Image 1 (cartoon, rainbow, N blue to C red):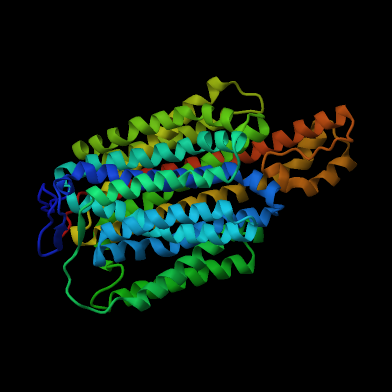
Image 2 (image 1 turned 180 degrees about the vertical axis):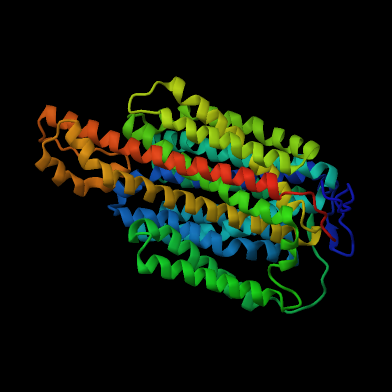
Length: 529
């Protein structure tokens, strides 16, 4: 673990932090701080995964197009990506408790506004606002933990943090399915209100205030603008690559513009006295590799969960609840893996735990190559277990590598950096893998349809429905003869499986790359105060 000295009472070194302004006996307890931030983290992570279940019903109820539904997700991702590091910096500078509470309250209120909006435009706008408040909340969860836990206990705290994150994400499909089927799509947003109220009241009672004691200086407004524009452009190019095409000028223009702006931001940050994101953080090899592996981890997790749910619901015909129940091994494995990963990281270091987690994920992805349109559940649950174990272990180890190797005074910024790489990795995972599946479906659909018995002329006409097939939906209609209908379903499902297998190979190879990078590049480094 890092050698930064943090008093067990939760009072960081005076040179780096103002002592927590914590009247009351409860505000000196780090474990109560962990419980408090777990409430907010659970709310945000649960929301991120239940929305995917609600999207089809939102589309039907509000007459939304596919592009509209993409923006329900993308507006949130763009706003979140643009504000995460800023949210961490604001917490470090003006008070992590203050901005965490603001994030909790704003996230809950904007969630209710989504349900009450009554239009797809309103849903998109309030989802963006929800992303802004998520950007205030998320990084300060880790910043608060970094400020109150001593180094010897920080790893276990991060392990529990990672467990809450992984389990809430994995529970989303079950909770979302139950709410959508038995209540309404609005209820997946309304549920954030009671969670938010409990989180706000409990956090207000127990959280200490902590911030940097840096005196009076000018806030890095140019850095905020450059970083926000760079991340917005980069994530926008990524999420639109699926619809515009990855070779389209618009996609490349947005991505390159984002990279240029981020390069300018990095250069500018080395020239200001009080930067938004101190470039000195990247002198730690462990922190830098931890950020890269975090992005790979969520590329694989969110991307894999996306196409797994398509397979279970659209190809196998399970309801959202049935699909969620079948992914319970993933949730349970994550529950075990996060504290286990923290313990292994504390004992052997992130250099051991991160490669082990990535190897487990690689095994899960390659195991999905055995899946077919009629696979038994016996072929499904082992990859679910391996994926859950791998994701939980990597999340615990990479969180320790990033936040644990940052000085206490930069805890919120480091938390924002981790959350930003996490979100960019997740956005890339979903967008890139949808494109991979779509490309494979487009190249194999005609052949699979004809092999299934669809006449060549009809198969050629059905190629226009490849977007639906890439989502696991067979392009059948009520007027089709039964024999033709069965052949279309068989050919479409097989074309989707071709895409799923290709996506599995891509994610598996990326996991191998991540394992090698962590094993070769990681070494123990010591943060400075």
